[in-house]
Image (cartoon, rainbow, N blue to C red):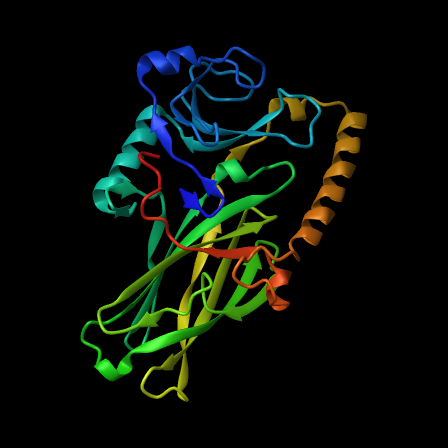
Length: 309
């Protein structure tokens, strides 16, 4: 996974390397790393034995509880019930085309076949991915990326060539809270779409709820009729974090400690809401409306992406 300021590339570990990373410390007791990313230090683990609330053979991403004072308080994003389920699911997604392969690199984006919208000769499709290394359960902060593909039919007439002027987003979280964002272009660019041409880019967003969805439209103008503009629908696409399990260290806290932590979490959520008003779109620094939402556009990096996971 590659963004403008973040890069993740997990490698599947060989048996000897994985064995060397076997954990006996509190929080990850009896867990074995399956993958490792040299850029982020991120690993997917498998529970060799049932311990600390984990089921034997579960595969998960660790997620430190940032609100707890106990370093053993580690929440978990569950990726697979067993090693076989985890690995075969990945292979099936690659073989079936569920995960796109670009320049011989695998991107773990999930595409819903129904997440496609066609307006005239232009088709927009979206795929999404959850980033555990930038997410947390405590406090609730869930980070997603999405990849958008815009293409014009090769059978379209030449005079249908057009240029993207702006974008509009309607963003809804699991609580039903809605935010609207509008800004010029995408990725600081104003791509021209002509018959048979494809344009792709990636973008990111965060939610304080475990799921949410986005929808909207692009505004284009025709190259040969510059005063004629039209909107192209962006299909609604949903984002949801994997199933997670709260650290047993949190569940075993005393009432006073838990109440104090809850107060800290409430304050953290208020701070997160304030932060959501900050502008994270590098291409729209002067756009006041864009500052209301933590959404930023990043071009797809063809040369740097996940080698395996």
